[in-house]
Image 1 (cartoon, helix red, strand yellow):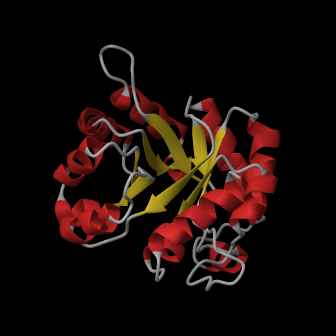
Image 2 (image 1 turned 180 degrees about the vertical axis):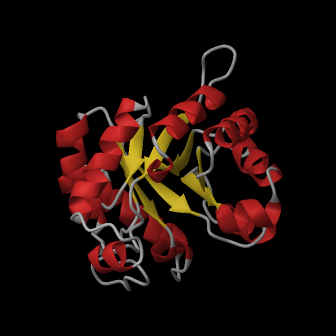
Length: 232
C-alpha cells in the first residue's frame, strides 16, 4: 500500500456518511471509520462502505487486557477492513495478542497499527495528567519500538514524529498521521499539526484528514487539494 489520504468520516450515523461519500463521483477515497460512526451505525456501516469499493481504516483504538483484545480482534478480522488499531500503551503482550486474534486461519489479516500518543496530547498534559515525565518524543519512539517488537505494521503518530519513527523503526514501518491541517485552516483541538505538504516532506505514509475535508464548503475540492499536496 502506497501513500494515501484517509478521510475521517466522523459522522454520527450511516445516512450522513453515505450522503457525504455520494459526493465523490468516480472517486473512492480511503475512509476512516472511528468510534462515533461505528458506535452509532454498528458494524454494518463497515460492510456498506466496503461494498462501495472503499478501503477502510477502522479506528477503534482497542485497549484492554490481552485476552479481551484478542477476542475483539477475532470479530473485527471478519469485517474485511484494511487497517485497524489499538493503543500501544496496552503493552507488548496486548499487542501480540491482538495480532494473534486479527490473523485469519489462512494467515491473512488487516494491517495493525498502534496509537503512540494522541495528537491532542502535549508535553504539559503528558506530565500533569498521565504523570509521564519523559519528553513526549522519547515516549512516542519507545511506544513505536514496542509496536515493532510485537510484530505490528506501524503506528499512529503526529506528523512531527513520522520521520524519526522511520529512523528508529525502519522505512517499512508505517506512519499514519492525523493532525493534518491546511496552512490557511483552523487547527481545532489538535496540538501537534502539519500541512499535507509538510507531512509529505517528513515521510508520513498516510495522512488522516477530517474536518478540513468533511466540513469544507466543497469537500471533493478539499480532498483533491489534500491529495495534490500530499501525493502530488
